[in-house]
Structures are given as C-alpha cells and as structure tokens.
Figure 1 (cartoon, rainbow, N blue to C red):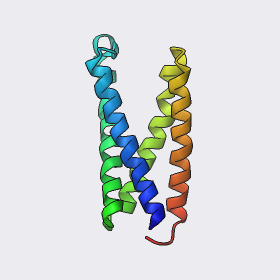
Figure 2: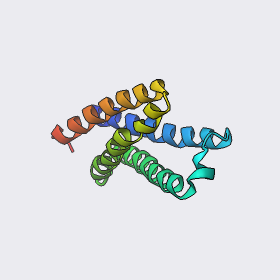
Figure 3: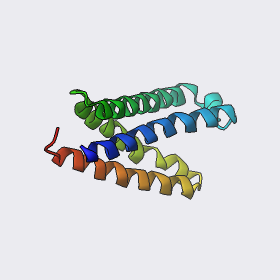
Figure 4: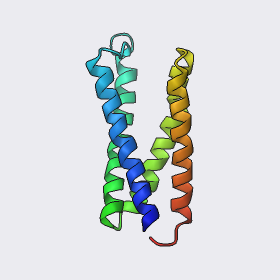
Amino acid sequence: MRANRWAAGYVILVGVSMLSMWLLFYLGNSIPELETEPMRILMHLLAEGLTAICLITSGVGLLAGRHWGRGLYLFSMGMLIYTLVQSPGYFIQTGDNAFAAMFAVLLFGALVFSLRMLRATDT
C-alpha cells in the first residue's frame, strides 16, 4: 500500500505539472505553433491534456483505494511513457537540453513506478 502512495504522488505531481507547464507556455505566448501549425499543436495539447487528466485521476483512485485505480494507473503510465519518449525531440532540436534532461529523468521515474506496480501483489 505504501508503494501505491508513492506511485499516486508521482502521477498526480506529473499530471499537475504537465497542465501547469502548458498553461504557463500559453499565458507567456510561448507556443509559436499555435500560429504556424495550429492543428498539429492542438492535437498535441489534447493528447497531453488527456494524459495529465488520466494521471491525476488514477493517482486519486490509487489513494482512495478504488478498484479501477490500478488499471487506470497502468493505462495512464503508458500514455505518459509515450509522451516522454516523443516530446523531447522538439526540445533537442531547439537546443533546450535542460528540458530534454527533465524528460529523461521523468521517463526513468515512469518506468520504475510502472514496473513496481506491475510486480506488486497487494492490489
């Protein structure tokens, strides 16, 4: 059960961070693709928003001991792992290595927590 609290904390923190990051980018006029590639970036934002919502919801489900929490957690972690592999390319191409490093750290955490949840017997 203690492992579930750590896993829940991780996904809630990452989900809230994702939503906050995009909100700050938007408020700071730091998404030039809204002008140059609006459909592509809107679909990207939709995918990241859905990922963040699933992460937060699954974390709350785990903390509340809901039967659906573990399944949604694993599903949302799959969504997160995909975005953590796909998203750094943009920042690597623009030379923003700090963001690329952040994605690598988050990917490591996502893999560790996912594997721990898959191996957990106390569901």
